[in-house]
Length: 350
Image (tube, rainbow, N blue to C red; front, side, top):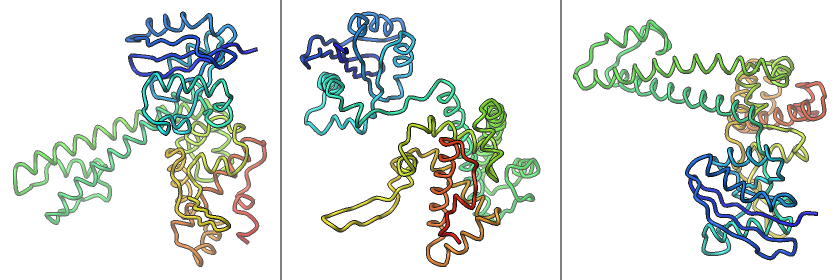
């Protein structure tokens, strides 16, 4: 029998705590400074008497990893709540004290379990996500540097000897190319260094991604089952999805990726608009990249896409394929079924 329900409004250096009993009455609250990890552990020690027969809830924030991990080590029942679904701002003036009390009250009522519980990734999933997202960020920096260099070259009708600016031949040429003003030379040198350093970091991160993918059996399974899938794609899909069995169905997993349309409804009329894009951006991005590759390389997908192109724009074809791929991958991982591209595209593709 749960006797206490604890709500914690956690920040970088302070935590607001509220405790309600089995009848929903506030029995304890405190504001604790936590400048370092020992102070955070001391705060949890003071909460220990309530958690012998109690539950605790905290928002899903970037600074809560240490907090939730410490609770798990101590064997406590901790719920991580989606900050967006909590909607703490809608009830008027927002303060840390009101937030902690509201979290504790809604934990007591069971509202957080029904509506706001979110997935808490394991240590390995969290580390792999950081690795993959960091590599993605470095690729974007490399692209930005290339575009800036292209802009300078285009302005003066200069053309690189090689097709790709990141090639060794192009880098050597860029270091020696003559420009009409010394300031342009300074800018170009800085952009070259940005490009070279980003390429070096990407190589290091790519090796780490490949090694991580080899250590995850589900990622290796995806590489074997799906065409045009390598370590970056497979590991991103596995780590960003997390525990696939937590999704109730195909609509739930599509909504998690933001691959569902906005719906405006009134009475018996409803309108489906553009994508919500409220889901996981990394998952949506990697599925879009996979869809583009398959539409240009895989004969089955190319034939399906050609028939779709007679009715809709190519971007809608890509999004539709991304959603079908996601659902097919979810079915494979959650039910243990063999992935079939023909089945993934559906009977209506024929």
